[in-house]
Length: 314
Ligand code: SAH
Image (cartoon, rainbow, N blue to C red; front, side, top):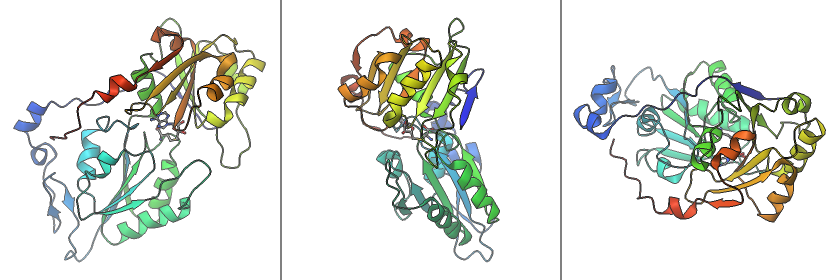
């Protein structure tokens, strides 16, 4: 079972004000490159074809959950420096558009049950471009190291002798909780968060349901769980979790079309069908969900649609 338990505080992303950036352009904050590489306006070296010994590199970059503003300053800087951008389905178009106009943009997006570019081929593409001295940005939804195959990609790039660096992103669990208005931990009711995949490489369920269900003082977050909602519900109840435990289904979290639907564990699977929830959707089970102060369905749509258009000024 791929399981991550987060204990302690989640690190908040850096908050760099527009004012600071006006006084300290990115070239000064991060410094200029050296050698034969050219320095673009974001202050990062782009490879120069005249360089005799090209040293390409792959950046595994977290694009965040969907809201184009929920991305780090560092990620944005690197996207703007890309010679090649290799991106997933869940990456928002606004971020793709931030790559240089002459960058090679490659869509390797997977849909549930449909992987047009096999994982091995994605890794070959990354290595092949970097081997030619290019700055390759592999842009992945959420955080690259949480159920994103970022680990596999990193190992494959390293074993090809190519430099690789990771830029974390805001994972769906953190974003969906924040935008729905409930915390993932709370000193009185949840002292841990467990991130669980409901989808395995070989489709065999290796989840330790007893361990997940035995502890009512934690928050359970299921990624890729929509088609397994019935089994999540049955297994947790069978293994002892209170059927009345609050649950939330968060569809398209942090985007303009986000939908958060609240229910309890014993109505989880019927809610998926009744509300016709679609992917990407996150399932959160735990007492913290009740802190959103809401029962029934909450549509965030109207609130989010009023947002201004994104204008990156950094
Ligand atoms: N690396 C990603 C997760 C990739 S697995 C991350 O850190 O967030 C893909 C699963 O993540 C989806 O099936 C869904 O369960 C969840 N997910 C990703 N983005 C989401 C979003 N905006 N809203 C709800 N769930 C999301």
